[in-house]
Length: 289
Image (cartoon, one colour):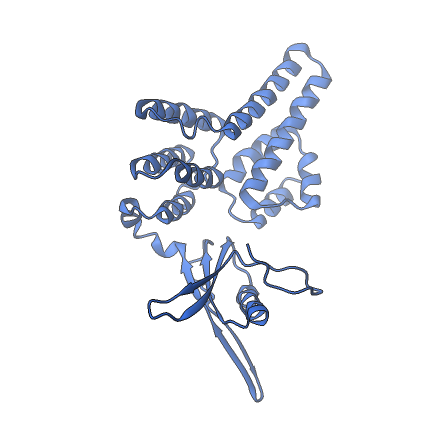
């Protein structure tokens, strides 16, 4: 990832990918692939894209091509230009956008496409479509995972794409265990164990089992220490899952989460499956103070 700014009071800014290419005619072009995981409306988004563009021009003296991918749930929000009008000075900066929701009526095309990005778009759309329907969400997670094998991708491609699907589509614990059993059976039938042999998944399952054991120990022995350990493990697990879903958690939010009871944590563990933006967590915490 190339740095695109000099030292400045505003701090560092980064482009997701900055690529220099040549057209068929031989002309050199610099492409700024500004791939924002932009999950919500933002008033200053177009200005931010403009700043990325102008800073690259300032650093390399090349005009880059900017592209933004919008992953929010608003059908109408499609920022594509930054406009400034002053006396004797006008600016009209346009940039390309891809709105994932525009593919909601073309899922059959995505389903049949061999483009790896089709899996990414389909996973995003199905996450939105299956809100509140966990069993249907599990079925789609399994179907999307099978697609990775059936399309003949290489092992590393399968792992990379699966990790995105797994990060995006989080299931309740019971359904997650069912999913893993189904996936293990499927991999055994195909005589490959790409995903189920990955160390990090076994590690995460070990954390969940350890949390369950800690809570069980607290119930069986009636010891406060055991119950407290189980509660701390529950909090840590929820915080990790929220970070996977929404990005870094604000210190104030973490403090609130660590103050929740076990029942509240379990409720949050169910509710966050449908969170798509940080504001969802804010609203949930405010309603459970």
